[in-house]
Image 1: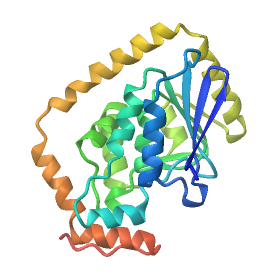
Image 2: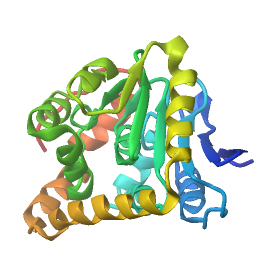
Image 3: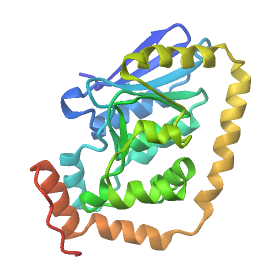
Length: 253
């Protein structure tokens, strides 16, 4: 059974994450299906791609049980391929966020061109609470979108931030009461679909290219720190504690 659902409504193609019982946690299969859907050539009449989550949560991030197993080998999460597919998609990509967007789910939303959120939604990076750290690719997106102050708060404390606060700071495009989310999302989609397609493609390509310069900043030492966190005893303890729904006991090694 597919872990995503694709719906077409006129020029709008909506991709639903469909693991509501797991808060739409991104396991390997779902990441692959999402990446393939975003890399697929759009139909001639397509104008907008929308990413949504079924159930109460938008996306809780990487599947913790799967991540804990792969962390033992130091294996990379592979989420970068999905996020890059969002960035490089020729069409505008809109995240409609009805609930929590945490860790990889937060990155997924913020890699989209526009975010339309419910005032019930929260955005966060809980990695410090489970002994992990975002790699260079993930951290630089936070800096690009959120700026240094909010990025430090989100990463170092690890607590989710309300969508309304991010909107008040100009960090996400829209934040409306929950009962108005569908209407506001439809307005944004209709507005995008009415604009000139070639203009939108050119503008998106321009913004992505201008942000890519940060990839060239030397960061081997940062990568080493991230790998050390991933392979640490603290990471094993933190992820196990999260799965067992208890407080983690960290020792710094």
